[in-house]
Length: 80
Image (tube, rainbow, N blue to C red; front, side):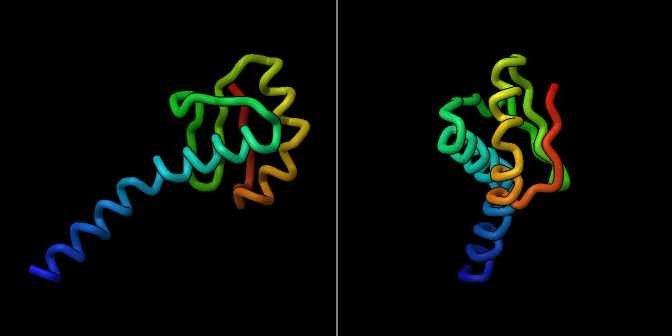
């Protein structure tokens, strides 16, 4: 049973990895820019962060884009 419990925990961590990273991205953006984003406006795939927001919010995030990339270890930021 101990092995099964360990396996289930590893699967749970793998499934929640994206959700956890989204929360980290949102917290980092809030810390750097003061902007609060909802999780449904942030998408992450293969090291690319995609943000769906208003033009004013996108411009504010673009000003801090280099520090966000460094801190979050992502390759690109796309804006919708």
